[in-house]
Image (cartoon, rainbow, N blue to C red; front, side):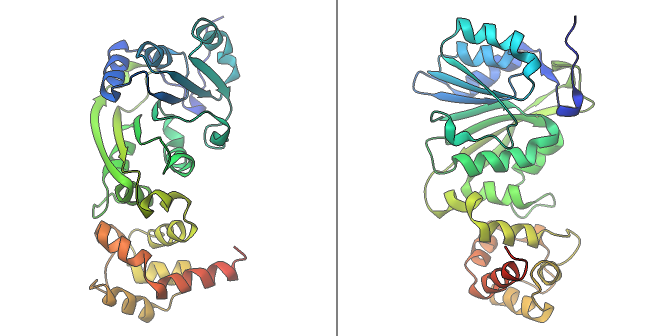
Length: 279
């Protein structure tokens, strides 16, 4: 009986071998690498990662119906370990150390999954991700700070290293073909300094998400909504950093965000609101 794809969980399997070859070459894998793959699917990328010469491939897959396709690959390739579960909720601490993450990510979990991977691996030996995502998601991940598309995750990644969209992938490269084109995003993490703690820094996460609470509102208005900072006080904090009272989150540079992270007055309001909410 033919396999029935579950598009509700993003099952658009890669079928273009040339894309696999390009990804493994781009990642420059060698025998010192241990690779994490998210969403092994039908195994095409999995087999490419095994053939790349990487020492280990740890593949996480949600759909246990795929055992009949993936377990024979693992049986004949001892470098591959299969793990079954939801990648967003998965306990990555239970896996051997990895140096690279290479994956074709289901579109609907891109943002929560990248947050989860950064929480699990930032500051570790893992300093490189090559992720195939929806083209629009790629733009959001790689836009950094100070862009119309800036968002909490893009600002955080920009503070931790460098991100760029390195290749477009047409929808014909998948089965079933998605309704949109894809793109490959390359994320290189710096691996040093306090930025490695940002994904696990509760204060940073609350500050950055609250600041982007409503994109059309000013920072002062967002802080008033998210942290109950009086608007006039919010404007004073902005002025202390040479920012206009009408500044919006997408207008701030990376250095602006770094300075706000260190602002004691803003931090005190965020902590107080957290206590009020029982956080």
